[in-house]
Length: 205
Image (cartoon, rainbow, N blue to C red; front, top):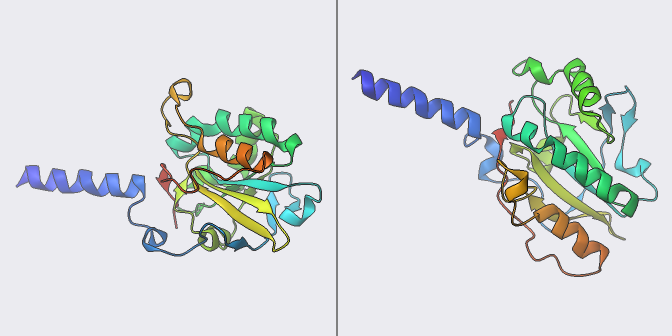
């Protein structure tokens, strides 16, 4: 009986940490080709940031991420590298912290400020206060990427999913999904893999 109880508790912990119980896993949010609505969210410097502020951008690498998820932490340097590689080419990173900070105090606004300073983030790190934006996108994990391209219709969703195919080891990555997608857009080519499975922690509500 103790064994069954222990197994049940371990299963519950795994489900909570990997995000199989969030409502967005069963549907909702943007699909490829949808037009993403703009937002106005507070940056770590206290200023409000919208996509419309980026007049010269060709698109955006919107990444839902946080301080406390081990997966997000493992991807921080790669997120920094993405911004450094593509912001001058017209595709800046826009990072959004979607978690409920009462559930995850380590993701508080003050903690975000400290983390961004310690890591040297060169991109906006926005807080989704009231958790209104991540459900619109359909994000379920941290990290979860939405690549947008500016079109005549608006900010069109071109790629959804993971950053690459190896969260454990950046040096062992075989496929760089986001880089491949942005490169395709810059070259005017079709994106080969438009949707992948995001790997990370569940967004805490």
